[in-house]
Structures are given as structure tokens and as C-alpha cells.
Image (cartoon, rainbow, N blue to C red; front, side, top):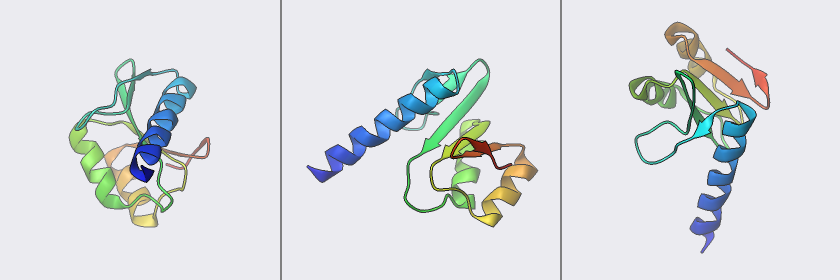
Length: 95
């Protein structure tokens, strides 16, 4: 039961983020969470900060921006700058 609530909450957050970024929600395993024209976006609704491994996986998916409610680690920020991935946390651009 608890997993179902978490899954629903995450889906709601993905849809809200897609709307906020004026994108179309996609979702599904192995796909970005939303698209806006040619830009693909990923939404992370985690209680911990996003690490560099997530940035590497997003690059494999072709994601151009990642939105996280809890922020990013320093190595993740450095890697995102190197790979030209836009990072957004709490409505502000981090990298």
C-alpha cells in the first residue's frame, strides 16, 4: 500500500513538472519523464540529493534537463556542466 502512494505521488510530481516546464508528460521505464520540443526532461522526487550516476544514466537517455526537489551533489553538478545538462532544483537553475 505504501509503495502505491509513493508511486502516485511521484507521477503527480512528474506531471506538475512537465506542466511547469511547458512540456508533454511521457514517463515509462527507460524513457524521459517529459518532452518540450526537442528537449527531454527527467524529474526526481527523492528525499536525498541526486548523485552523478543519475546524470550519467540521463545522458544515455538523451535527457537535456533534470528537475530535483532535493538538489544535487557537487560531483553531479560538475558532471552536468561537462555534459551540458541543465539542472533545476526548487524552481532555480543550478547548472
